[in-house]
Image 1 (cartoon, rainbow, N blue to C red):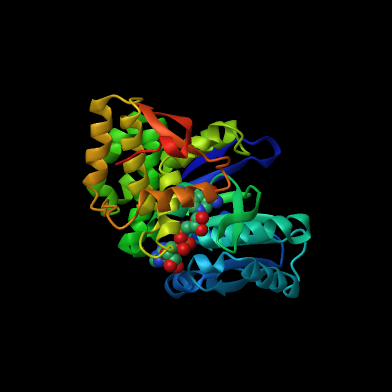
Image 2: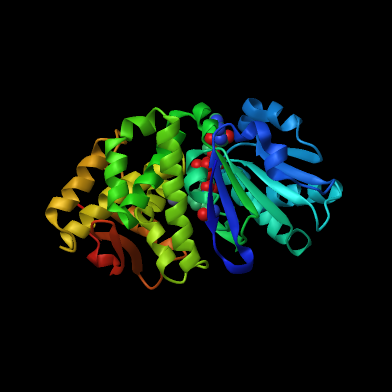
Length: 347
Ligand SMILES: NC(=O)c1ccc[n+]([C@@H]2O[C@H](COP(=O)([O-])OP(=O)(O)OC[C@H]3O[C@@H](n4cnc5c(N)ncnc54)[C@H](O)[C@@H]3O)[C@@H](O)[C@H]2O)c1
Ligand SMILES: [Zn+2]
């Protein structure tokens, strides 16, 4: 079991990483209160529900899987259940699932009785390396993603890499997109490790995964410690995302998993950096050929540039026809560029 402390003054907490943690949850959680709450989704519950039966003092609520559950209506249902089950200020909410469950449970915990304890047990690779760490919570409204939400740190994050063994391939690739991002934005040596061990990652070798998940959490922790509320540095986590979010929106969230869209996003944002001459040719080619080798469909033939740019202008980070891009400029280094919509060219 490895512990990564995340230092945010009074909001500090530990990320615990290991295997087989799920069978010792009562010990690891060491919760005293009699009324607590687990939020999970139907898929996760079908596979791991029996492990949760043994937990003492927990009520379980199972939501429908998928992004549609990240809505204000579902949040109200969850809050109503929390109230009906008699949760108090001393109670704890556990998010047991992917990023959807984590964002929703975190948001509900942050507003129930002005905030009660919250623990993350992420079950997707994306949630283990990204969404469970850093304290962003929220739900979607109309077509706006994460437009309602809060910064609210969990009390603990418990990561069991063995839970990944049941993930569908597409969801695995989703996490791989974010993992590569960490190497490119922060740690070139880690990028080299990912390249070398990509088969170990794809086949979920436990030792490789423990190292990869740990390194990603460390990087995210260090970035969040320096900029908890995304006033500056934290923006670097958006590499691949300006383009990726537009592609997800442009395909109605049906064609790409989030991380697959981020892979396509990192590919075209690297081309953009190349066209702007802010990156060396040798390095951009290294990034592009690795991203190509992953087998995600990178062709954009069906999507016009103007439609994608239109989606970008709707993002809350962009205004006045200026689009914020995080572009790779050096090994393990990226930089924000605010580009006028006429300056954008990845073709
Ligand atoms: N808070 C943040 O900082 C942050 C960061 C990145 C992404 N997000 C959010 O995370 C969400 C995406 O998260 P996600 O990719 O985990 O999606 P998800 O929660 O929808 O999970 C993906 C699918 O995998 C299934 N699943 C989960 N764990 C499983 C397991 N162990 N075995 C088999 N199936 C399993 C789920 O039921 C679901 O069908 C998005 O809403 C995104 O906005 C938040
Ligand atoms: Zn992401």
